[in-house]
Amino acid sequence: MAMFLFQTSIRWTACWLEVLTVSVLIGTCLFVIYVPSDVVSPSLAALALSYALNMTGIFQYTLRFWLETEAKFTSVERIQGYVNGLASEAPPIIEGRQPNSDWPEEGAITFENVDVRYREGLPLVLKSISLDIKSEEKIGIVGRTGSVLFVGTVRYNLDPFNSYTDEEIWSALEKCHMKQTVLELEGQLDALVVENGENFSVGERQLLCMSRALLRHSKILVLDEATAAIDTETDSLVQETIKEAFSDCTMLTIAHRLNTVANCDRILVLHDGQIVEFDTPANLLANEMSTFSQMLRLQNLKLKKVRRTQRR
Image (cartoon, rainbow, N blue to C red; front, side, top):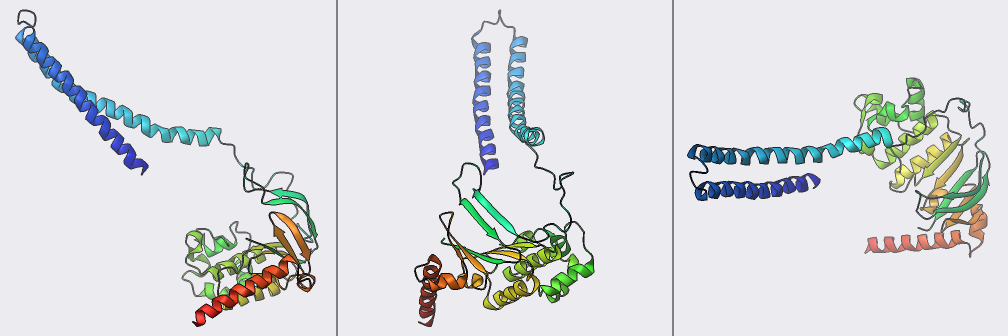
């Protein structure tokens, strides 16, 4: 669209240049006709007409070239702004402040009056969050209201810094039930992964991301809608992988499908960016007036309506 507007503006400028140069040519002709011959000789009149004709082409070409050059140099100006005027982010590893390779050792998490917004100027999405999460505890996070793969190979997505051997990568894939799937790919670990992992199903993307976390021996794992858009069979496979492969991890599971957090040690219920409940599933369900109980009943009611509609 921008290029179309640019080309049309150039064409519009060319039309007005034609009008201007034709006006100059007409003025020259009138000058030659009406000025007495004893003032302007025939040879000088012919020279004036010849130069007026040539000037139309030269004038148009020069002005259009200048306009296009000025417009195209906007890109150069912006590149210069990115090179010289844009603050660079911090390096991946800050010298002298690199943690030990086994950090964190336990996986305990403490939030103390944490406020979070998506960017400066936007309203807070989390407000004054304070809570303690013990090591290896499984926390479900729900509220009223994906996994990312990068262009490259399977190996690059699992181990972008080439820190692990093939045996370690295959072991992680096997524990996450993805070994057979990768073995069937052309190139196996060197198989191509397209933008956003579109050549894998949603469930396979989740399992590959879990393989990446398992390969790094992460002590803290955050799952954001890990089973939101997958079928029941894949959902069971993901839940089994979480239970077996990450049993010694501290886990935060963010979900709107409440059945995915029913087996967590504690459930954190958020509303309007604030904590409204934080307790075990049994205690929350025992209280019929709790927000979690009400959300669960509402979800079950919607599910029954969907099933009733499908039967019809």
